[in-house]
Every structure is written in C-alpha cells, then in structure tokens.
Amino acid sequence: MSEQKTSQKPTPAIKKRRPRGQHDARMAFRINSAHKERIELAAFEAGQTVSEFAAAALLKEADAVMEKKRVTRLDEEDWERFVEAITNPQPLPESALAIARHMAKYTRQTENGIEMLPGYVENFPGDLSEGPF
Image (cartoon, rainbow, N blue to C red; front, side, top):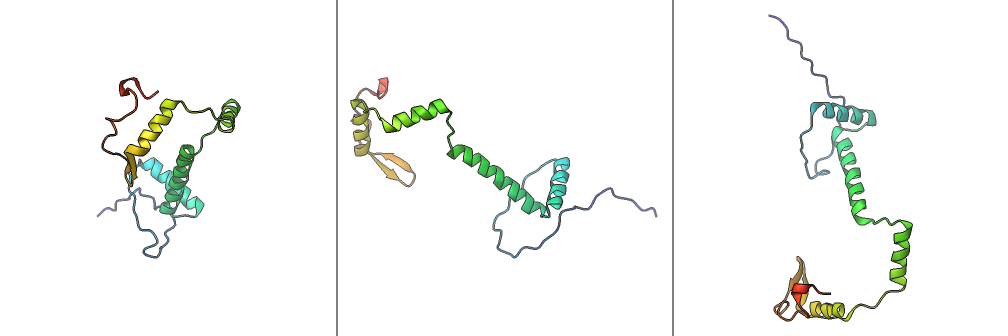
C-alpha cells in the first residue's frame, strides 16, 4: 500500500479560545486562496487569530468610510464662502418662508421619517410644476 502525501500547509494563525458570549455575531464571505494565505500569514505575524485580524482590518476600513461620510473637507476658497454665509446670512426669500410655514403645518416627524398630513399638496403655496422657488 502506497502512502499519499498531501500538499496542505498547516494554518499559521494562532488558535485562541474566547469565552462564549463575547462575540455574538458571525460574518462569512468567500475569497481566493492566495488572499486567504496572505491574511493568515499576516494574522500570524501580528500575533492574532484570523478572526481578530480580519475584524480589526474591517472595522478600520468601516471607520474610514464612515469618516468620509461625516466629514466635509473644504479648500480655502470654499471655507471662506462657508464662514461668510454663516456669519452674514442672507434673508430667505418669502417663497422659502412660505414653504417652511407650510411644512411646519402639514408634516410631522415620525420614527420612520417625515409624514405628510392631509392637505399638504392641496394647500402647497405656489405652483408645484415650476418648483418651489
């Protein structure tokens, strides 16, 4: 009987047991084998499990994406225009004030967003086909 050799390498990631309940969710996704090996090696080099390493990397990227959504960066010219607008605001046109009064009267905030009340469209100030301003 001949022995067959397998070319599988042992996973280099360190196995650590975590107390149950510390992590309450699971994620699963597919990647190619070359990427998997790179991630496993990097996790090993970092002294982390693959799960710890992947979670940290995903959270770092998620934070970067969310930061881009929350923060608006302005160049010097736009910054000056912004400061001018908030320090010397221009009065709103009467049409905008009429729409604001209308919305205050015919809408209400709900947990799912803003709800239009009866009469919103029928009593809208101005001609809706031309836009509000």
